[in-house]
Length: 337
Image (cartoon, rainbow, N blue to C red):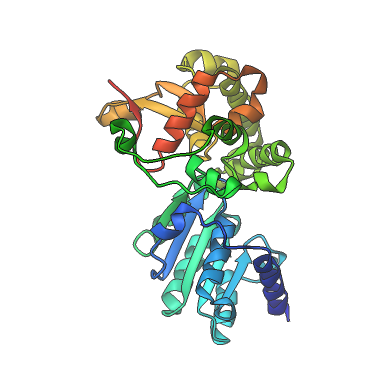
């Protein structure tokens, strides 16, 4: 029975997951909700979070984890799987990389409406398609976004060093009580490779470049329905940003370099921003001006800077990126108008 094969894959993955280190988002999620969405960039640990939920709550026998790109779904639907799983007493359906499944939002809505005591938790490796698909689910799903490791999480993940969680106002006011022995070497490691948890698996730069290529060649074109020619333009734009960031963009000049209309360039920036490849820092303005061109452009995190432009590392720029990246987890970050 093909269902048994899915269960075997699930148990194999589960056996490799430990619960020693739990991401910050775990405590923020209302796990009592019937429909939960966890979005975020590729490689930040969404799959691990799902499987840890199963282990921590001892619900292995009542749950099923599937990845929506499994070959099973070439001839079967999510809805039919949910029905079969429910028939045999299933209570927790965990769907990974749901954006790879066509018409995912409609089928999840149907599952939600048809099986009133079935909990559904799903993730999307790219936030792009989730923006498009949430129309039918906006009133039903609780949506959470998982970011990469903070420096505090890195210290715990890498060296088992526990520090208190503090906000920006506490730091500015000096109202903290954090003591880490020789923090600067540890911070340098974090800036180079500590944002993505998969650095523990080795060959970090190779893996990170694979993530970048997957975002540019799979996520963005597939889920925004753009042409192959546009993919090349996006790669060129990312290269321009890599060589220049941080910088204040001259939209006319960049459009000329890419051979595209200036009017469509903001869309290109938006694609890369929503895919968590870049950060756009805008002025602190309201109304239609707030939707205008960004004041400064950065790569999304310091790991990307070291991976894409190792020969042009500027510590001042690295610190700027680190600050903005971390602040955006909980707050907005803008330039004064």
